[in-house]
Image (cartoon, rainbow, N blue to C red; front, top):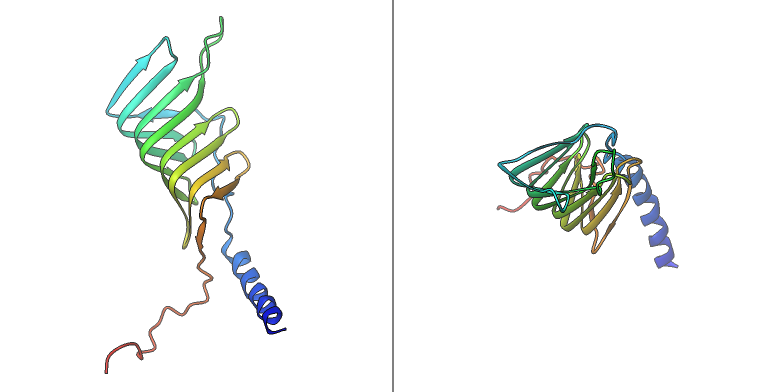
Length: 174
């Protein structure tokens, strides 16, 4: 019976904490109809393969979304007569940072697929939402609706706003 009471108390305390913090991926959205702008130190284009590889201080901007990395490869759709090629997928590697007005996400690698507005970040993923942080090995986000999942030893630190942040003066010392 004490274990059951402890679980009930834990659920009652934890539920308001999650509700107050607003932990969600809804801030990870972008207007996929916006143009994509890429800047870098250098660019290598492979016309036959339909790729462009940007290296050095790469920044990709689409609407309010900003992605930066050491290298970004852009894969274009196959050539169809009478139609221009468009971006199919963007792969970023090396210190990837993804920023929206509400969140910042970091990882070793990221793949952004434009058609389905899906962002997959892998390798030591760290997502910061205000005072809250989530860490995992993989994060998949639908940038149209802000839904997603984190997998691989997920760690969540939630600031409930309940702490006083003040010292009682009783720590350590004499």
